[in-house]
Amino acid sequence: MTMPDKANIKFAATKQDRSNQTLEDILEAASNLLEQADPELLTSRLLAAKSGYSLGTLNKRLISVENVFIWLIEQGQKKYIKEATQIIEDFDLEAPLHVLVETLIDKFFTVMEKINPKVIRYYEHRMALKIGFYEDYDRADAMVKPFLAAARKNLTNTFRELNESEMQLILRSALCFVERPFIYDNPIAGTMEHRRIAVENIVRMLGR
Image 1: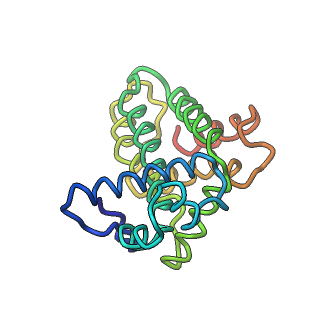
Image 2 (image 1 turned 90 degrees about the horizontal axis):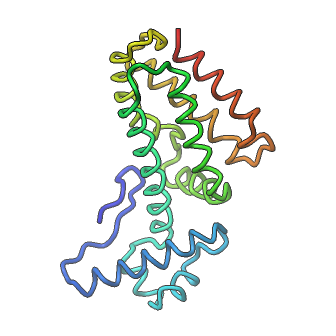
C-alpha cells in the first residue's frame, strides 16, 4: 500500500505474506482506535497495545506511526466523496438543480453526524505540520467533472453554465458550507437552518 506523496506518507515495502499480515493487523487496530473518535488515543503506545505488536515493529512497518491514522482518515474522506460523486452521476436528468443539492447535503449531513470533529481537526493540524499548507477543500475537486457533465445533460434549464475553474471554486465553497459547522462544533451544524443556508447558497452559486 502506498500513501499520498504530498505528505510523504507511506508504508514500508514488503513482499512477505507474514509482513503483509502484520500490516493488516496494525491497520485494523488503528481503525478501531479511530472509531473511538478521541485523538488522545491516537498514539504509538496505544496502537502497539491494541495491535499486539511492539513499538519497534510499528515503526519498521509504518515508517511513522502517526501516518497510519492520517491515511485511514483520508480513506474515509475519499469513500464519502466517491459516494457523493455517484449520486451526481446517477442524478435524474429531468429533476431540477435544487433536488440534487438537497440530496447531496442530506448525504453529507448523515456522514458528518457520525464523525467526531476532533478527529478531523487532528487530521488537518497534522497535515498542515507535514506540508506547511493544507488545501482544505481539494476533496471537492473529484466532483467537478461529474457535476459539469450533469449540468450539460440536465433537461430542466436550472443549472448555470460554468467552466471547470468556476465549478471547482464553487464546489470547494459548497463543501465549506456543509462541513465547517460540524468540524468547529457550531450549534447550527446539522439543523434545518444549516440545511436551508447550505441549500439556498449552493443553488444560488450553481443555478440560473
